Image (cartoon, rainbow, N blue to C red; front, side, top):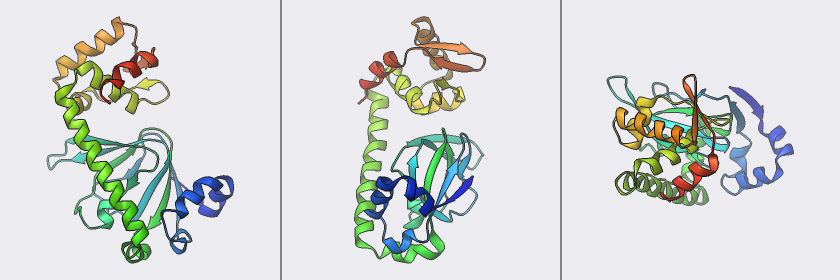
Length: 223
């Protein structure tokens, strides 16, 4: 992780800083800083306390629920303007989850030790957070509805586009099968169909996206 002073970032991204001002009280932004995470780097670990509220400014990340037996389940993707640690802020979550960068990520970090009280007393921020949490709930509901209503090829195409990095799909297939709600065998069959149809190409343990346009057409049917 690389830390950068917020004023340095703001000087290069004026519009982005103005969008932060629309969410957070100015006094809190003086305490904030910028964090940069590399691909596959942990932003948050489930077994560590969350010390900051993060706002994802650039990049994509994924959230894993870690079970008591140590197994992980992918439950959600994060993109620009998503919060990380908001449930800990409002004390709705006792144990945090793993949050891992899919590609290079830039986050605004606000230390909770000094900012929590002010955040929870700021009506404008709480209104923004309430709308965000409502939207997050709807997205998760839509995901589980899509698991029942759409074919695997449509769900898998959308998943690959969400998780790809520089044109490569390289996730563990056991986790992929669990997320899209099918058996490992059924997943392999569908990936082979994608290869036969010229959508993907197997390169070592990774899949290279040959036709992003074709995947996008399939994924649109889940929207």
